[in-house]
Amino acid sequence: MAKEPSMRDPAEELAALKIQVGQVGDSLRRQDDALRTRGMKLPTEAITEFSALIKDISAIESVIGGNVIELGQLRALTATGAMINSTLDVDDVLARAMDQVIVLAGAERGFIILSNEQTGDLEFRISRDSTGKGSTSGDGPQLSMNIVNEVIETGKPMLTDNAYKDPRIQDHMSVAQFVLRSVVCVPLTQRDRRIGAVYVDNRLRAGVFTDRERNLLTAFANQAAVAIENARLFTNIQRSLVEITEMKDLMDNVFASVGSAIITTNANDLVITFNKAAESIFGTRQDDAIGRRLVDVLPLEDADIESHVRTVLENDESFSFQKSMTLPGKTAPAFLSFKFSPLRDSAGDTQGVTVAVDDLTEENEREKMLGLLENYLPPGMMPRIHEIAGIDLGGESREMTCMFAEVRPFNSFPDDIDAQDLMDQINRYLTVATLAVQERDGVIDKYMGSELMVLFNTQLNPQPDHALRAIESALDIRDAFLKFYQEIGILPEPHWYRIGLHTGIATLGNVGSHNRRNFTAIGDTINLSKRLEENATAGQIIISEDLLLKARQIAGTEDLPGLRLEPREALQVKGRQQFTRIYEVFRDQ
Image 1 (cartoon, rainbow, N blue to C red):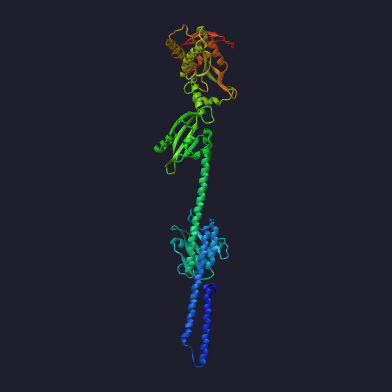
Image 2 (tube, one colour; image 1 turned 180 degrees about the vertical axis):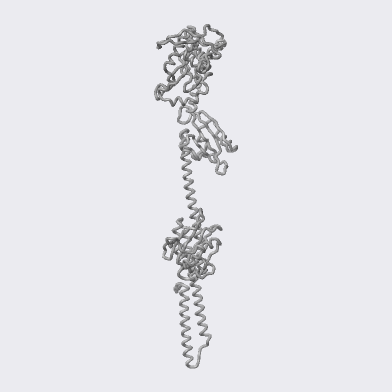
């Protein structure tokens, strides 16, 4: 079996045919010359037909040559497209592709000019020359920006075989200045929006470019536009991803630093967020909570979690409740506050539920302690507790009034009363006196058996009129006990209480250690107040002359309205050499 001949290139076949035809034509002309010597000749048509045939073959050869060039250009474009789509390093790919375009088009230089997305200014993205190097000089590429601007503005390609003589652009200064010859410029278009242009030229030769080179450049521009758009999209996606990552990291850090437990779910009631505080409160690891149903994560046995979630999703509103419960791994009950809220997206649509949980155990205990303290401090005193905490050990000296009051001596109770009943009785009397003291904003420093020590004008209860307040408070105690006696059906004569008051300088502050301290008052003023109470007889309210002088100064008069003062024999109390002038106080009936 004969072996098939290998296929030859059409251009080579045509060239061989042209040679053969030329050889046959030359042979005919020689024959015609020989015949003419004998008076004969060949038909004229035979010679002219061969000449026409050679011209036809040359024309076909030219067409095939153009097709070969165009085929090469198309193959190069295909390779360029594959190269562009294989990487996101657009600048490198476009530079290499531009090198091929320059070679295929016979250009000297090539540029890709893009419009800046923010400013709109034109910027050179790619600049190449026929040597494969960047063509930008120190002052920028020497090309006609008039042509570039016109192409971008109109969206129509421009082809000129001799820009220096082209009536459309020969008046442009840049054309004359840079002595431009062959130029092709086509627009770069993305979705009907012109983003720049592709420009090639040859400053050395005219007539280099034809419609074929213009079409080549247009096809290349379409590929470049796609590549540039993909690169911009990829850059924007990367930037958005970085921003999203940073925002997620920020939110994670925020959630991690928030003291409240934050739990969020999606529309399917599956946990998508479980912060560190939630781990600490509920003893569940974040990885174990994510993806589980909320009802399986929150250990609320007697609470209808599904009902709470359904209420939030259906009504699109928040609600709160508090609950005391024993958490996993804990022995003492915790007091927790729960708040269920809608979890909304950026459009405001509810996509799930947010549960914020606060452990209020310590706060609840603190409130209980403060509530207990309020039994000993008058209304309005609690907000100033922090002032006392800020006072160093040793305190500060200030003028104040101190009152000691014995509500009922222990020896006035029956001998056969048991200890529990005795304590209950004493507490009833102390309660009567305490309520009366609080009406005048006195601070009860301490209880001592059946006695109480009361302070006026401390850091807790600053009172410019402390001397008058103290007198009125003592008289209020008397009035309160008279009422109390009537309520329990007795009228002791004399009354059981006895009260002593004195005004002077005392040191008020914290005593004890840095770990445990008590706020109190010490000094001669406190000691003298106690001595006056000890020297008072049953039913007496005794004040010192110092207190009386201070009260008169505050009232601005010698006679204190509504009060009656009766001088008593001066006392020399234990610890004092001088005598203390005293007065018994009554209400002026």
